[in-house]
Length: 362
Image 1 (cartoon, rainbow, N blue to C red):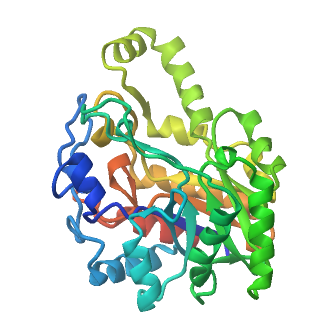
Image 2 (image 1 turned 90 degrees about the vertical axis):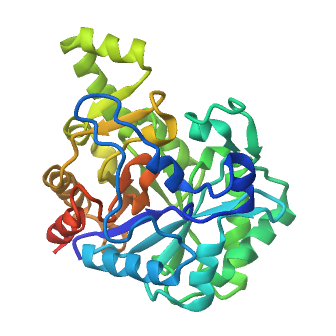
Protein backbone atom coordinates (compact mmCIF):
# COMPACT_ATOMS: atom_id res chain seq x y z
CA UNK A 1 0.00 0.00 0.00
CA UNK A 2 1.58 3.27 -1.12
CA UNK A 3 -0.84 5.52 0.72
CA UNK A 4 -4.31 5.65 2.24
CA UNK A 5 -6.05 8.53 0.48
CA UNK A 6 -9.25 9.76 2.16
CA UNK A 7 -11.29 12.43 0.38
CA UNK A 8 -13.38 15.09 2.13
CA UNK A 9 -17.01 14.95 1.05
CA UNK A 10 -19.42 17.89 1.20
CA UNK A 11 -23.15 17.09 1.69
CA UNK A 12 -24.31 20.57 0.63
CA UNK A 13 -25.93 19.46 -2.65
CA UNK A 14 -29.56 19.10 -1.64
CA UNK A 15 -32.23 21.45 -0.38
CA UNK A 16 -32.79 21.99 3.31
CA UNK A 17 -35.37 24.34 4.89
CA UNK A 18 -32.68 26.46 6.54
CA UNK A 19 -30.86 27.23 3.30
CA UNK A 20 -34.16 27.99 1.60
CA UNK A 21 -34.90 30.50 4.36
CA UNK A 22 -31.45 32.09 4.41
CA UNK A 23 -30.63 32.20 0.70
CA UNK A 24 -33.87 31.62 -1.20
CA UNK A 25 -35.86 28.64 -2.40
CA UNK A 26 -33.77 25.94 -4.05
CA UNK A 27 -30.38 27.10 -2.78
CA UNK A 28 -27.60 24.50 -2.78
CA UNK A 29 -23.89 24.73 -3.50
CA UNK A 30 -24.76 24.54 -7.20
CA UNK A 31 -26.36 27.99 -6.91
CA UNK A 32 -22.94 29.50 -6.22
CA UNK A 33 -21.16 27.31 -8.77
CA UNK A 34 -23.50 28.20 -11.62
CA UNK A 35 -23.29 31.92 -10.85
CA UNK A 36 -19.49 32.19 -10.77
CA UNK A 37 -17.77 34.67 -13.12
CA UNK A 38 -14.19 34.84 -14.44
CA UNK A 39 -12.30 37.57 -12.56
CA UNK A 40 -9.24 37.93 -14.77
CA UNK A 41 -7.92 36.74 -18.12
CA UNK A 42 -7.46 32.98 -18.06
CA UNK A 43 -9.63 32.48 -14.96
CA UNK A 44 -11.80 29.44 -15.73
CA UNK A 45 -15.25 30.07 -14.27
CA UNK A 46 -17.89 28.85 -13.97
CA UNK A 47 -16.80 25.27 -13.37
CA UNK A 48 -19.19 22.92 -15.13
CA UNK A 49 -19.71 19.37 -13.87
CA UNK A 50 -19.14 16.49 -16.27
CA UNK A 51 -20.91 13.14 -16.34
CA UNK A 52 -22.59 13.46 -12.92
CA UNK A 53 -24.20 16.78 -13.82
CA UNK A 54 -25.73 19.15 -11.26
CA UNK A 55 -26.74 16.28 -9.05
CA UNK A 56 -28.91 15.98 -5.97
CA UNK A 57 -27.30 13.96 -3.17
CA UNK A 58 -30.66 12.55 -2.15
CA UNK A 59 -30.44 10.42 -5.29
CA UNK A 60 -28.91 7.05 -4.26
CA UNK A 61 -27.78 6.36 -7.83
CA UNK A 62 -25.59 9.48 -7.74
CA UNK A 63 -24.01 8.32 -4.48
CA UNK A 64 -23.25 4.93 -6.05
CA UNK A 65 -21.65 6.55 -9.08
CA UNK A 66 -19.55 8.82 -6.86
CA UNK A 67 -18.28 5.79 -4.95
CA UNK A 68 -17.43 3.95 -8.17
CA UNK A 69 -15.45 6.92 -9.48
CA UNK A 70 -13.62 7.23 -6.17
CA UNK A 71 -12.71 3.51 -6.29
CA UNK A 72 -11.35 4.03 -9.80
CA UNK A 73 -9.18 6.86 -8.45
CA UNK A 74 -7.70 4.63 -5.75
CA UNK A 75 -9.36 6.56 -2.93
CA UNK A 76 -9.84 4.46 0.20
CA UNK A 77 -13.00 6.24 1.32
CA UNK A 78 -14.89 9.45 1.95
CA UNK A 79 -14.74 11.60 5.07
CA UNK A 80 -18.23 13.08 5.28
CA UNK A 81 -18.55 16.50 6.86
CA UNK A 82 -20.75 16.11 9.92
CA UNK A 83 -22.55 19.07 11.50
CA UNK A 84 -23.46 18.91 15.19
CA UNK A 85 -24.18 22.35 16.63
CA UNK A 86 -25.03 21.25 20.16
CA UNK A 87 -28.29 20.19 21.82
CA UNK A 88 -28.88 17.68 19.05
CA UNK A 89 -29.06 20.26 16.25
CA UNK A 90 -27.73 18.96 12.93
CA UNK A 91 -27.78 20.14 9.34
CA UNK A 92 -27.14 18.40 6.00
CA UNK A 93 -27.18 15.02 7.74
CA UNK A 94 -29.64 13.28 5.43
CA UNK A 95 -27.27 12.03 2.66
CA UNK A 96 -24.94 10.34 5.15
CA UNK A 97 -27.83 8.96 7.19
CA UNK A 98 -29.23 7.37 4.04
CA UNK A 99 -25.82 5.88 3.24
CA UNK A 100 -25.62 4.48 6.75
CA UNK A 101 -29.15 3.09 6.92
CA UNK A 102 -29.26 1.63 3.41
CA UNK A 103 -25.80 0.07 3.46
CA UNK A 104 -25.16 1.60 0.04
CA UNK A 105 -22.82 2.43 -1.46
CA UNK A 106 -20.62 -0.28 0.01
CA UNK A 107 -17.67 2.10 0.16
CA UNK A 108 -15.59 3.05 3.22
CA UNK A 109 -16.29 6.25 5.11
CA UNK A 110 -15.54 8.17 8.28
CA UNK A 111 -16.74 11.46 9.78
CA UNK A 112 -15.26 14.92 10.16
CA UNK A 113 -16.98 17.21 12.65
CA UNK A 114 -17.27 20.67 11.06
CA UNK A 115 -17.50 22.40 14.43
CA UNK A 116 -17.93 25.99 13.32
CA UNK A 117 -20.62 28.65 13.35
CA UNK A 118 -22.39 29.35 10.06
CA UNK A 119 -22.65 32.99 9.07
CA UNK A 120 -23.47 34.97 5.94
CA UNK A 121 -19.76 35.63 5.35
CA UNK A 122 -19.48 32.04 4.05
CA UNK A 123 -21.09 33.17 0.80
CA UNK A 124 -19.84 36.76 0.81
CA UNK A 125 -20.92 37.57 -2.72
CA UNK A 126 -24.50 37.36 -1.45
CA UNK A 127 -24.44 40.72 0.32
CA UNK A 128 -27.42 40.30 2.59
CA UNK A 129 -26.68 40.90 6.24
CA UNK A 130 -22.88 40.99 6.27
CA UNK A 131 -21.47 38.67 8.93
CA UNK A 132 -24.83 37.84 10.46
CA UNK A 133 -24.79 34.53 12.34
CA UNK A 134 -27.08 31.91 10.83
CA UNK A 135 -26.53 29.09 13.29
CA UNK A 136 -24.06 29.07 16.15
CA UNK A 137 -21.79 26.22 17.12
CA UNK A 138 -22.29 25.56 20.83
CA UNK A 139 -20.77 23.22 23.40
CA UNK A 140 -23.49 22.72 26.07
CA UNK A 141 -21.55 20.29 28.28
CA UNK A 142 -21.22 16.62 29.21
CA UNK A 143 -24.79 15.63 28.44
CA UNK A 144 -24.37 16.91 24.91
CA UNK A 145 -21.00 15.16 24.55
CA UNK A 146 -22.70 11.86 25.43
CA UNK A 147 -25.64 12.53 23.07
CA UNK A 148 -23.22 13.38 20.26
CA UNK A 149 -21.31 10.12 20.80
CA UNK A 150 -24.42 7.98 20.67
CA UNK A 151 -25.54 9.82 17.54
CA UNK A 152 -22.42 8.68 15.67
CA UNK A 153 -22.01 5.26 17.36
CA UNK A 154 -24.00 3.41 14.66
CA UNK A 155 -21.55 4.78 12.10
CA UNK A 156 -18.54 3.76 14.20
CA UNK A 157 -19.90 0.20 14.35
CA UNK A 158 -20.58 -0.03 10.61
CA UNK A 159 -18.23 -2.42 8.78
CA UNK A 160 -17.46 0.34 6.25
CA UNK A 161 -16.12 2.77 8.86
CA UNK A 162 -12.44 3.66 8.33
CA UNK A 163 -10.15 2.78 11.23
CA UNK A 164 -6.57 3.52 12.23
CA UNK A 165 -4.91 1.09 14.63
CA UNK A 166 -8.31 -0.66 14.91
CA UNK A 167 -10.00 2.52 16.14
CA UNK A 168 -12.62 4.56 14.24
CA UNK A 169 -11.09 7.71 12.73
CA UNK A 170 -12.88 10.90 13.79
CA UNK A 171 -11.63 14.27 12.57
CA UNK A 172 -12.31 17.63 14.26
CA UNK A 173 -12.25 20.61 11.91
CA UNK A 174 -11.37 23.20 14.57
CA UNK A 175 -9.71 21.41 17.51
CA UNK A 176 -8.76 24.68 19.19
CA UNK A 177 -12.44 25.70 19.30
CA UNK A 178 -13.31 22.90 21.72
CA UNK A 179 -13.64 24.29 25.26
CA UNK A 180 -11.85 21.29 26.79
CA UNK A 181 -10.55 18.94 24.09
CA UNK A 182 -8.89 16.52 26.50
CA UNK A 183 -12.14 16.07 28.44
CA UNK A 184 -14.16 15.58 25.25
CA UNK A 185 -11.77 12.90 23.96
CA UNK A 186 -11.52 11.19 27.35
CA UNK A 187 -15.31 10.89 27.53
CA UNK A 188 -15.61 9.56 23.99
CA UNK A 189 -12.80 7.04 24.48
CA UNK A 190 -14.47 5.79 27.66
CA UNK A 191 -17.84 5.49 25.93
CA UNK A 192 -16.21 3.77 22.95
CA UNK A 193 -14.67 1.07 25.15
CA UNK A 194 -17.97 0.62 27.00
CA UNK A 195 -19.63 0.00 23.64
CA UNK A 196 -17.18 -2.61 22.38
CA UNK A 197 -14.71 -0.40 20.52
CA UNK A 198 -10.99 -0.03 21.23
CA UNK A 199 -11.26 3.74 21.46
CA UNK A 200 -11.32 6.57 18.91
CA UNK A 201 -8.48 7.72 16.68
CA UNK A 202 -8.86 11.49 17.01
CA UNK A 203 -7.43 13.65 14.24
CA UNK A 204 -7.32 17.44 14.50
CA UNK A 205 -7.23 19.56 11.37
CA UNK A 206 -4.73 22.38 11.62
CA UNK A 207 -3.20 24.96 9.31
CA UNK A 208 -1.68 28.41 9.67
CA UNK A 209 1.89 29.25 10.73
CA UNK A 210 4.23 26.26 10.97
CA UNK A 211 4.70 26.68 14.72
CA UNK A 212 1.00 25.95 15.23
CA UNK A 213 1.14 22.24 14.52
CA UNK A 214 2.20 21.43 18.06
CA UNK A 215 -0.86 23.14 19.53
CA UNK A 216 -3.22 20.43 18.35
CA UNK A 217 -0.97 17.50 19.20
CA UNK A 218 -0.36 18.96 22.66
CA UNK A 219 -4.13 18.88 23.26
CA UNK A 220 -4.01 15.09 23.16
CA UNK A 221 -5.12 14.33 19.60
CA UNK A 222 -3.74 11.10 18.21
CA UNK A 223 -2.78 12.75 14.96
CA UNK A 224 -2.90 15.92 12.95
CA UNK A 225 -4.25 16.53 9.48
CA UNK A 226 -1.86 19.28 8.45
CA UNK A 227 -2.79 21.88 5.81
CA UNK A 228 0.20 23.83 4.57
CA UNK A 229 -1.70 26.24 2.37
CA UNK A 230 -0.99 29.22 4.62
CA UNK A 231 2.73 28.49 4.47
CA UNK A 232 2.55 27.96 0.69
CA UNK A 233 0.58 31.19 0.17
CA UNK A 234 3.11 33.14 2.22
CA UNK A 235 5.91 31.79 0.03
CA UNK A 236 3.94 32.58 -3.12
CA UNK A 237 3.14 36.06 -1.76
CA UNK A 238 6.85 36.70 -1.35
CA UNK A 239 7.31 35.90 -5.03
CA UNK A 240 4.54 38.31 -6.03
CA UNK A 241 5.42 41.05 -3.55
CA UNK A 242 9.13 41.23 -4.23
CA UNK A 243 9.47 40.01 -7.81
CA UNK A 244 6.25 41.47 -9.25
CA UNK A 245 5.29 44.27 -6.83
CA UNK A 246 3.16 46.30 -9.25
CA UNK A 247 1.02 43.33 -10.19
CA UNK A 248 0.67 42.30 -6.55
CA UNK A 249 -0.42 45.77 -5.41
CA UNK A 250 -2.87 46.06 -8.32
CA UNK A 251 -4.72 42.88 -7.44
CA UNK A 252 -4.71 43.26 -3.68
CA UNK A 253 -5.72 46.94 -3.65
CA UNK A 254 -8.26 46.94 -6.46
CA UNK A 255 -9.92 43.57 -6.02
CA UNK A 256 -8.94 42.27 -2.58
CA UNK A 257 -8.42 39.08 -4.56
CA UNK A 258 -5.64 36.79 -3.36
CA UNK A 259 -4.61 34.63 -6.29
CA UNK A 260 -1.69 32.24 -6.55
CA UNK A 261 -0.48 29.99 -9.30
CA UNK A 262 -1.11 26.36 -8.43
CA UNK A 263 2.48 25.41 -9.25
CA UNK A 264 3.74 27.96 -6.70
CA UNK A 265 1.45 26.47 -4.07
CA UNK A 266 2.45 22.86 -4.62
CA UNK A 267 6.13 23.83 -4.76
CA UNK A 268 5.87 25.14 -1.20
CA UNK A 269 3.12 22.95 0.20
CA UNK A 270 5.04 20.32 2.17
CA UNK A 271 7.54 20.64 5.00
CA UNK A 272 9.34 18.30 7.38
CA UNK A 273 6.26 18.42 9.61
CA UNK A 274 4.46 16.20 7.09
CA UNK A 275 7.05 13.48 7.62
CA UNK A 276 6.10 12.99 11.28
CA UNK A 277 4.43 9.66 12.07
CA UNK A 278 1.35 11.31 13.57
CA UNK A 279 0.93 14.00 10.91
CA UNK A 280 -1.21 13.27 7.85
CA UNK A 281 -0.54 15.64 4.91
CA UNK A 282 -3.15 17.23 2.65
CA UNK A 283 -3.25 17.28 -1.13
CA UNK A 284 -5.48 19.58 -3.13
CA UNK A 285 -6.52 19.38 -6.78
CA UNK A 286 -7.12 23.14 -6.90
CA UNK A 287 -8.67 25.90 -4.80
CA UNK A 288 -10.92 28.70 -6.00
CA UNK A 289 -13.37 30.22 -3.58
CA UNK A 290 -14.64 32.88 -5.99
CA UNK A 291 -18.01 31.12 -6.56
CA UNK A 292 -18.73 31.87 -2.91
CA UNK A 293 -16.76 35.06 -2.36
CA UNK A 294 -16.38 36.73 -5.79
CA UNK A 295 -13.52 39.27 -5.56
CA UNK A 296 -13.22 38.73 -1.81
CA UNK A 297 -11.69 35.33 -2.33
CA UNK A 298 -8.55 33.27 -2.22
CA UNK A 299 -7.90 31.20 -5.30
CA UNK A 300 -5.29 29.11 -7.04
CA UNK A 301 -5.17 29.09 -10.83
CA UNK A 302 -3.37 27.07 -13.47
CA UNK A 303 -3.98 23.63 -11.99
CA UNK A 304 -3.58 20.76 -14.45
CA UNK A 305 -3.64 16.99 -14.04
CA UNK A 306 0.11 16.91 -14.68
CA UNK A 307 0.83 19.39 -11.87
CA UNK A 308 -1.56 17.50 -9.60
CA UNK A 309 0.41 14.34 -10.39
CA UNK A 310 3.62 15.99 -9.15
CA UNK A 311 1.83 17.15 -6.03
CA UNK A 312 0.46 13.70 -5.16
CA UNK A 313 3.81 12.04 -5.85
CA UNK A 314 5.45 14.35 -3.32
CA UNK A 315 2.82 13.50 -0.71
CA UNK A 316 3.16 9.75 -1.28
CA UNK A 317 6.93 9.97 -0.88
CA UNK A 318 6.45 11.80 2.43
CA UNK A 319 4.45 8.95 3.98
CA UNK A 320 6.40 5.95 2.69
CA UNK A 321 8.56 5.59 5.81
CA UNK A 322 5.52 5.53 8.12
CA UNK A 323 3.72 2.49 9.47
CA UNK A 324 1.22 1.23 6.91
CA UNK A 325 -1.79 2.26 8.98
CA UNK A 326 -0.42 5.80 9.24
CA UNK A 327 0.24 6.42 5.56
CA UNK A 328 -2.80 8.63 5.42
CA UNK A 329 -3.19 11.50 2.98
CA UNK A 330 -6.28 13.68 3.12
CA UNK A 331 -7.57 14.80 -0.26
CA UNK A 332 -9.28 18.15 -0.34
CA UNK A 333 -11.76 17.35 -1.70
CA UNK A 334 -14.06 15.00 -3.56
CA UNK A 335 -16.80 17.53 -4.32
CA UNK A 336 -16.14 21.03 -2.92
CA UNK A 337 -17.27 22.69 -6.14
CA UNK A 338 -17.87 26.05 -4.45
CA UNK A 339 -14.21 26.14 -3.40
CA UNK A 340 -12.87 24.71 -6.66
CA UNK A 341 -11.32 21.65 -5.00
CA UNK A 342 -13.00 18.58 -6.41
CA UNK A 343 -12.07 15.33 -8.12
CA UNK A 344 -15.35 14.67 -9.86
CA UNK A 345 -15.30 14.92 -13.67
CA UNK A 346 -15.82 18.37 -15.13
CA UNK A 347 -16.26 19.83 -18.59
CA UNK A 348 -12.63 20.98 -18.81
CA UNK A 349 -10.68 17.86 -17.87
CA UNK A 350 -13.22 15.04 -17.69
CA UNK A 351 -11.83 12.18 -15.58
CA UNK A 352 -8.19 13.19 -15.90
CA UNK A 353 -7.67 14.01 -12.20
CA UNK A 354 -9.19 10.64 -11.26
CA UNK A 355 -6.95 8.84 -13.77
CA UNK A 356 -3.91 10.74 -12.53
CA UNK A 357 -4.49 9.85 -8.89
CA UNK A 358 -4.97 6.17 -9.75
CA UNK A 359 -1.75 6.19 -11.83
CA UNK A 360 0.31 7.55 -8.92
CA UNK A 361 -1.21 5.22 -6.32
CA UNK A 362 -0.74 2.15 -8.51
